[in-house]
Structures are given as structure tokens and as C-alpha cells.
Image (tube, rainbow, N blue to C red; front, top):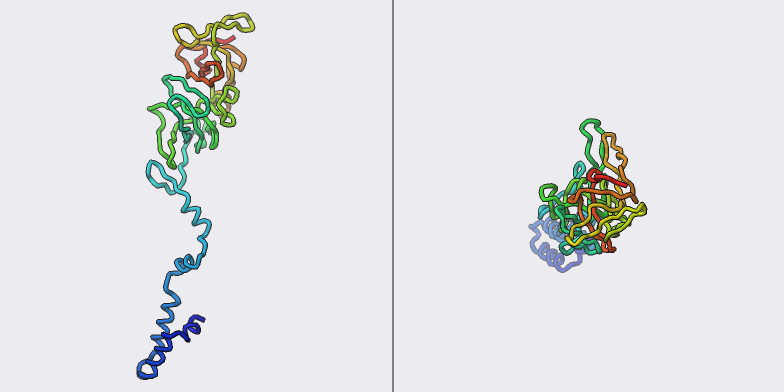
Length: 276
């Protein structure tokens, strides 16, 4: 069809006149070569795009997805191993989150963020039972940042922290920052500290925040975790329950403030010295 279209072109007519003048020169190969040069000027893929063809969806998706770790391009998404958790940290001012949770100064720095990926868990060395990771992708969590444990990384252009699931303090139901949505991890407890001298239902007085500024080392248990995993992959029962009161060491736990008028501490059940 292309040869027929070019048959009436001025170039072919001019070549035909030359052919009639110089009959000793075979012009057919020359004309065929010139016609083919018009038909196939570009590679096939280039010609398709020149005519407005749309690239395949798979190619477009591959081109749009770029996995970058600390300025290194990765061929696939980052996948944590064992009980490691990749947390995308929330951008916030020092000591305060963008959603109302004030994180008090302590030896353990607590940050909040969203789980980007999590490993399957650890295998118990004796029983061979898989101890699954307690959180999954999409969970909003509070986590402890320990300088000597885990790793701060830049992933997909955002600040992340890779850390073991043992450093996940709690999950926040619905991503809401409040004592009601606070779900402690493992054997942790959320304890509400008394404001001033308070008296329990049984008539026991609780010392509140004194003139020294030191927080009290007792309070009411508001929420408890599911318990520590044992060798069978089951949660050990918690020794305390919400509504009970506990006493713990003065320097135990991490301080939290949900800006609801109360001070809170997150402590381990093993750090509680007594309860009532």
C-alpha cells in the first residue's frame, strides 16, 4: 500500500524520467530502497509512541514506583526480617506530636508513627514455635527510640525507624491519641497517676504531685497488654487488671501526658511492687 501511495510522488516521477534516459541503469532496486526508507524510518516502539500509542499499564506502574533507601535505589520494597518493625515517624515538634499527645522527657524517648512493614516474628530457640510480631502494616504505634538499638533510615523520602517489636510501647486504636484508645503491648500497663492527694474507694490515700515536682510511684491501672509470649506462642496471663491500683519503682516506666488533666506512666507488669 505504501509503494502504491508513493508511486505518484514527484520523486518517483523524477526517477522514472532518469530511468527512461539511462536505460542501462537498473532503477527498481533504488526505488524500492527509497520507498522502504520512508516506510521504516523509526524502530517499532518509537513509531507506536509517535502515533500516540499508550504504554502498557505494567510498564507505567513500574516506572512510577521507586523504592529508595538512604539515597540508594532498591529493586523491590524493603521487607523487615524476624520481629523487626519499620515505622514511619510522624513529623512533629520536639516533645509534642501533631495530634495532642505530649511526650514527657525521660531516659526513653517515645515517638509515634505508622507501621510501614513488619516481619513475621521470631522462632523460639527451644520449642521451634513462631512468636508472631505483635503489630502489622497500617497500625498506628508509639515506640521507644533507643540509640543503641534499631536504625534510623530515610525510606521513600520519609524518616523511618527500624526496631524490634519489643520496643513498640502500644498501638493507638484508630490513630487517636487518648487513654481510651491506648492499647499497651506485651506485659505493659498504662497507669493513671493521681493529681493530688486522692482517696480510693477502700479509703487508701494516694499521694499526688508534690512540691518537689516528682511524680508519684503509684496509680490506677487504666489498660493492660495481652501479656508476654511464652515458648508455645501463647500470651502469659497478666497479674493485674484495669481498675486495680499498683505501686512501682520511682524510676520505672515512661511518662505520658494526653492533655486530659492527668499524668500517666507506662510500666511493665514486672516493675510493679504491689497492688490492691
